[in-house]
Amino acid sequence: MSKVHFDWSPEKYFAVPAASSTNLRLFDRSPAHLRWALANPKEATKAQKLGSLAHLAILESAYFKENYYRGPEGDKRTKPVRALWLEAEEDFGAEFVLAPDLFDTIQSMRDAVHSHPVASKLLLAEYGAANEASCFWDDVFTDVACKARIDALPIGEYEGCVVDLKTTLDASRDKFSRSCVQFGYEIQAAHYLEAWSAAGDNERPSFLFVALEKTPPFGCSVFCMDPASVELGRRKIDRLLERWAWCESDDDWPGYEEGIQDLSLPGYAFTREIE
Image 1 (cartoon, rainbow, N blue to C red):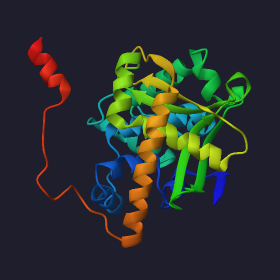
Image 2: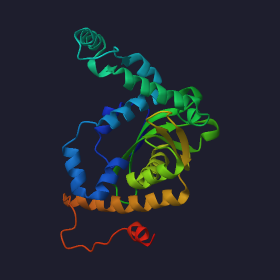
Image 3: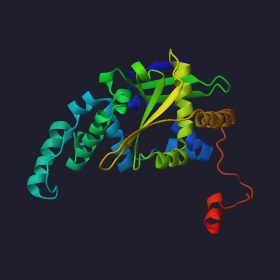
Image 4: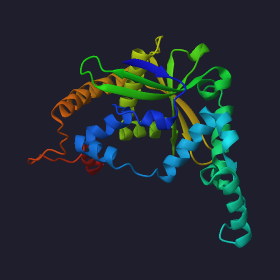
């Protein structure tokens, strides 16, 4: 199975059971953690909702403009303002009426991408970017079903790239590099490049992040993950998919190691002591 769809809703994509980069990163913690999370989905956090709405405003701007509305100004606890909110929610739907500060933040984040000379060409449909590509394929070594939802596939001078939009607190190179380590973004980079290699019809060897800050002045940076980091992600994926196949075959999704494990402090703890 190797397919790519540009017309799938997020809900349809997420309903397909397969190894995504998010699932693989949680599986790396333990198979039991992944199994529990899939069976007990949590409501999105405030930060996750902001990220999702920013993605919509940037990658599907026409849909956002047609469906989302800026809520009334003022204290929602007062009777006049509450009445205006109830009217707006009745007219447009409660989930589509956003608090003014949230709506303005999303608009500012979108404007930051529009004004960035590279990020705009990578993400915006007006420059020919094909956004929201849902890819599905079977891993050739383990036969595990895999999936990925690629944010953008630009054309023109950046046609050799797969692009992902990340909202972050700090888009400086040093801090975003640390975020990559913390959240396992090298796994995502390798997984998405494999997704397009398996399901696409042309070669895209480079993986780019558009890192967009969530607070003023809404700084925006573009990073290309280096080949060594992508290769590290590929090695991790190979290991994870091999274990995933074992878990599926035995229907056994274990937690942490049950025996006594050696424990030492990370290297930086000793460095600080020397300083």
